[in-house]
Amino acid sequence: MTPNATGVDAVIDVVTAVLLIAGALMSLGAAIGLLRFPDLMSRMHAATKPQVLGLFLVLAAIGLQMREWWVWPILAVAWIFQLLTVPVSAHMVGRAGYRTKHLHPELLSTDELEAVVLRAAGQRAAEKAQEAESAMPHTGKARNGGNARNGGNGGNARNGGPSA
Amino acid sequence: MSRKRISFRTELPLLVWLVVVWGALWRDFSPGNLVFGALIAVVVARIFYLPPVELSGRFNVLRAIPFAAVFLGKVVAASFQVMYLAVFRGPTVTNAVVAVPLRSHSDLMVTATGHVISLIPGSLVVEVDRSTSTLYIHGLNVRNDVDTAKLRKEVQDTEASLIRIMGTRAEMDALRAEGWPATRGAGS
Image (tube, rainbow over all chains, first blue to last red; front, side):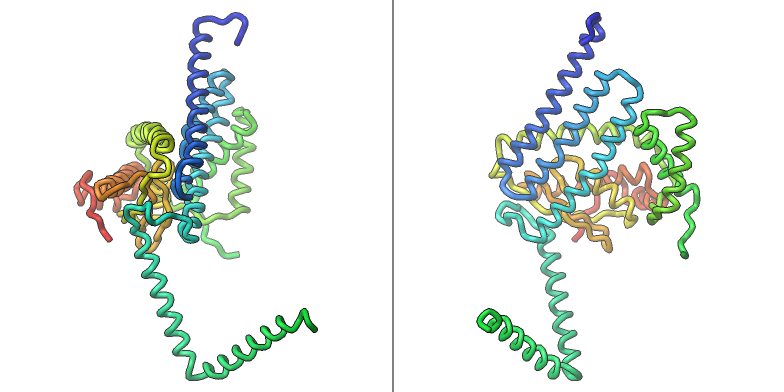
């Protein structure tokens, strides 16, 4: 607050206060969402998204209070970087979460990715089986025997290690 | 080293952006600082080589401004929606993973659509199939087929708007041919 507060200053202060409180509420919403949502994916919604708006509101409040023109470009750059990075991090975490099955299938009304994943997995398994089969006639037997022997040796060594 | 030369025109948006960041970080937009920043931007772009982003060469500002306004409005509305869901629905919220086939096969368009969709709370890109340019989207509070169709339509409408802003001529023609705003069917 400047000592000689005029009407304009008062209005700017009120707007700043509203923006700050709204921004803080967004963060509060994110925190509540983190606590209350049931699985990783829905938590990602709460953890990443409300901040985009929350940060925007807080940055706008800072810009209003500073009242220097040079602060606006850096605030804009900060927000744009947030816009660019948030979806990427959300996507990476969501993708990793889906692949490691950190989700509750019973809470999904439809899952159109599951069929695709299963089909791809089936295809890969079939390809692998085919590869193994085609490799069999030449070196299959020898390699299998070698593997078995190696495995056995490894097991023996590991088992026998501590006692020897 | 053999690398494909990038035309100055393709690189210009990146250079302008780097100069803006430089000026913002120094809080100094005087001509001298900007020229020095441009010099550094050129050197950085030469040394730290990245695959060029294939821009379509057109950018419709008249469509971009309303799009930005609508986007901001959607972010506000959806933020409050997620907050409401967090507070009142919490553990009982029902979600869905929805496959959305996109029209465009350009990396830029798929990325931009995924970004915009991810930034609007309530939808999150889980997986991208680049070969068929299909986005797999995790939607919050998607309870039935009606919600699924709504989410799919929203993603495809977003893509249509983005194509109108910065899509290539071919994408625009494809859009016109299918009679926008009617969206494509469920696809897969």
